[in-house]
Image (cartoon, rainbow, N blue to C red):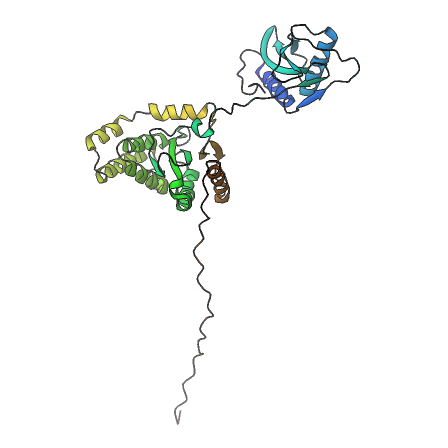
Amino acid sequence: MHEIIGVVLKGVRPLRCLALIASVAALGCHAQTSVPAGGAQAVQVGVKLTPEMARRVEVMIRNKAQVSLDYAISIGEPSKGEIAGYDQIVVTFTADGKAIKSAAFLLSDDGRTLAQFTKFDLSQDPKDKVSAAGRPARGGAQNAPVLIVGYDDLECPFCARMNAEIFPALLDRYKNQVRVVYRDFPLYEIHPWAMHAAIDANCLGASSTAGYWNFIDYVHAHADELAGAEKTAAKADATLDKLALDEGARQKVNTAELAACVQKQDDSKVKASVEEAEGEPLRVDSTPVLFINGEKVEGIVPIETLDRIIDGALIAAGKTPPPPVSPPPAAPVTAPVPVAAPTRPAAKPGS
C-alpha cells in the first residue's frame, strides 16, 4: 500500500513500528470502508477537513488497522485524486514528535467512504525486468519467445535436482522455443564453496558456452564429492579450479587467461548479481528461483506447473505450445513361462 511494507525505521521503538506498518498494510487489503451516512460531510480539494470529519477518518484508520495509541495521526488537506469522485488525503503517523511514515488514502467527495489502493506499473514487459545479457544460454536463440532465468547456487541440492531433471525435460519438450540462462546467487553464508564455484564457472563462460554448461552440470552432479574426505572448503576450491582448467583445455580456450581468472577469484560480478537479485523488483532470497518471461517461480515445483506457465507465455507471444512429450511405452507384461518340477530319477533294479 504505497510501499508501506519494508520501510526501515530507525531510532523509534522498532518493534512497535513494525506492528504499525503491518497494521496499516492490512487496512489496504480492504478495498473500501464506509462511514455511517448520518453526519457525513462533503470533501473539497484544498479545504482542511473539519475536526469532526478528521476524527472520523482517524478513528476508522486506528480501529481498522489497530494502530497503537502511542502514535499520533495527522491528516493533510484533500488534494485532487486520480479516481473520479475521490480526493486524496495524506495520513502521517508520528511518534515522539517524529514523523514515522505517511500513507495516501482516498476520501469520497461526499465524505462517506475511505479507501486505499495500490498502483502497479504495467508499462514494462515483465520479461525485461530480469536481465540475461552476457550470460551463457541453453535452448533457443536470443529471440526465443520464452526466456527462463534461473538464480542458481552450485552447492544447493535443490538447484542440482532442477538442473538434472527439470531443465532437461523442459528443453526436450519446448526445444528452441525456450532459452535458459543461469544468474549467480550463491548462498555463501551457508555454502562455503558456492562463491568459488560461481567465479570459476564465469571464468569458463567468458570464453566457452559449452565449457560453462559442462562445468555447471558436473559440479551439480558431484557436489557431494567435491570437498573430498577432508570435507573442507579449501579442498573443494582446489577441485573446482582443476575442473575448470581441465574443461578449458578440452574446449581449447586461452589457458593462460583462464588460469589468471581462476587464480584472481574476483567476486565483484557475482556479488553484483546477488545484490541486484535481492533488490526490487526481483526480491530473490533463496535458491532455486526462476523467472519465466518475468513470472517468478520459487523452489521446486511440479513439471506440470512449469509447463502451464510456459504454455501461457507462449500463447501470450502468439506461439502454439508443443504437445506434451509422451513417456516411453511400458514394456509389455507377459505371463511367466511355467517351469516343470524336477522329477525324481527312477530307482534302479535291485536298489
